[in-house]
Length: 43
Image (tube, rainbow, N blue to C red; front, side, top):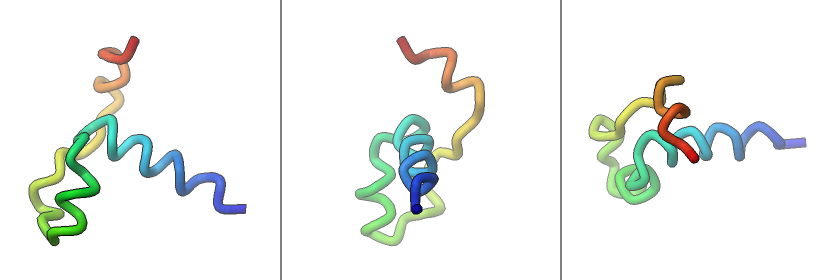
């Protein structure tokens, strides 16, 4: 069903809005990892 792919991308974008650009450029080491604490800053 591929429903969980969007959750994974959503978390990546919450942790690092530049995730897609960094991934496309091969700069995956520069991506900020997701932590549960990041959810506390959402409104």
